[in-house]
Amino acid sequence: MACPPERRIMYLLSRPKAQAMYNASPKVSVIVPFYNEQDSIAPLYEAIVRALQPLQIGFEMMFVDDGSKDQTLARANQIAQRDSRVRVVKFRRNCGQTAAMAAGIEYASAEILVTMDGDLQNDPADIPMFLDAIDSGYDIVVGWRHQRQDKLISRKIPSRIANWLIGKVTGVPIKDNGCSLKAFRASVIKPIPLYSEMHRFIPAMASIAAPRIAEVRVRHHARRFGQSKYGLSRIYKVLLDLLVIKTLASFAARPLLWFGLLAAPLLLCGTVLLGYTLLSFALNGTPLSLPLAGCGIIFVASAFMLLCSGALGELVYNLGDMRDHEFARLTQRLRTRIVPVETKAQ
Image (cartoon, rainbow, N blue to C red; front, side):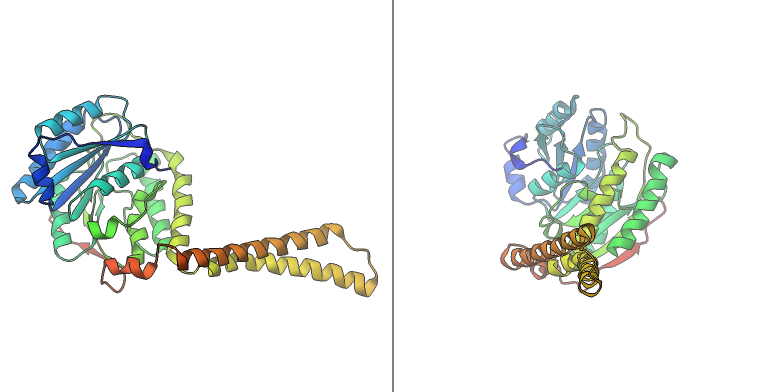
């Protein structure tokens, strides 16, 4: 679960001239969450600078410390004191990668946002490819780790199954939803609510706005420092989030239809049980079967409650703040398209 705003605190650690640079609105914000990555933060900072400095564009780095217990925050502060392009966000406790990315996205000021992991497995040298794809008209660019340097059983196989399942359920067939190296137009990503483990479902969440999505092949390196924070235990979270995404994408504008579909089998079963009990009593004089009649009443009552919940959802949608047609104005594209972008061999 994402941490509420009052549980996190933000530090802007930079020299006085930083404010003028931020007012100039840099073109690119690189958002990197860190959790106990004290040995990775300095090499990653240097790699980002090497990748973006030659482009001669304004950029900033949002380093999000997700409640680290080592020297990650101290080293991030040292970098921020030396380089005004670095901004540091600190969480009071560990809130998870999605919450960290959401905070970085919230505070980023550029028109293009790039997210990546802080463990040095993503390569900042690939960022220019993402920027080229954004400049060519795409709204979201997703990385594909085609030569993934992870364990086969615990990481690769579950990831392939999950990517196939996510593509089938959401209708957004991305090869590598788990790759954190992505680029977004700020106008598309900032309105999207992120919680739980939703950072890997951002393209599916954004599909409501029908953005143009591209995939690019990216490098992937073996972890150099520390240990992975993920294992097989995250599978059930992904499945639950997938159910939420499917519900939001398919029935956000029609909640009564969704609840009506859920209520239909209950109403049918309840009607059959009550009808059978009453007909047996009326035609044959058979005593009322309390178990059958009770189950029928429970089923009918449950169906009625679901229909009422759907009606309440309709009121919330029509009178609330979120409208899918307003969300769709974020982009003028007519439908979601995923286009593989050919890049030079890595």
